[in-house]
Length: 124
Image (cartoon, rainbow, N blue to C red):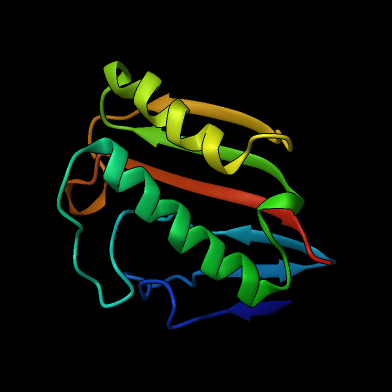
């Protein structure tokens, strides 16, 4: 088991790691729209979703994986009315490669984020 940690994504805000690699599989912790310095980005769900993907790309790269090797994504959104907007941004990052996905509306996310995404990916 290998713990994944990078300064190109926000540090964990609790007792967990940014991700773990086990048997050539990477399991990310949920990424919210914090900058690598730990500041919540301004803007709505579209801007927040782009920041979440920037964070995911950073931890995937550190793990030796990429968006192209993601096999499963779980999307947590604060409001299902934002589904279309989140889906539009999501499709910009997963255009030809389409991993399995779940999307769940939740009552609240850490730091009052509007979106959080976690992934499972194959390590190259």
